[in-house]
Amino acid sequence: MVKDSIALIGFMATGKSVVGKALVKQLGRDYEFLETDEIVIKLAGKTIPEIFSEEGEAVFRHYEIEACRKISKERKIVVSCGGGIVLNQINIDNLRKNCYIFLLEASIQEIYKRVKKDGIKSRPLIDTIAPLEDIKELLEDRQPLYYSAADFKIKTTGKSIKRVVRNIIAKLDNSDFF
Image 1 (tube, rainbow, N blue to C red):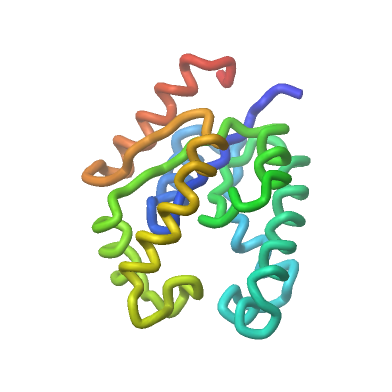
Image 2: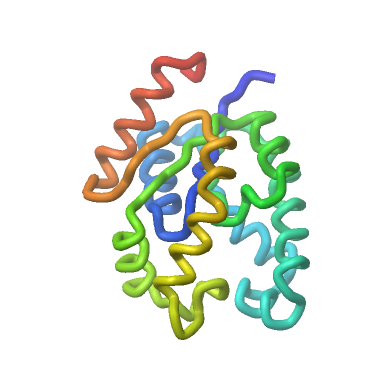
């Protein structure tokens, strides 16, 4: 199958959703924007914090697997993946079926600044007394998984959304995407 979709992976607050929406506008109306977290919410019938508090992280990860299975059957999508999507290789295998995988990266300080602005309460894994330390630890654990999953890597710290989108399109121009 020809890859005609894009998956944006990376740690929380690296810009996956805002970049994904802007990328869809750039690619045109043939493309649709999806978020794995939104698919999980629909599958579970509850919010992510509710899933974590009522059912636990393992159940949330199961919903993510189901979301990636659904995504693997879609065409012409840009999908923003939850930060932990790389924790299960089956997710990456499913995404690879139809997507080029882009890793969006940001500095720890930038991630913390963005998360504080958006609200830490909506982020169950860092809604603790030491969110900055949790970010550092989680990022350190996940970094090798992000790197092994990514076809391309894009840094977002200090870059406009427009510039990040241009960087993604430039990398796609050098592939068989267009």
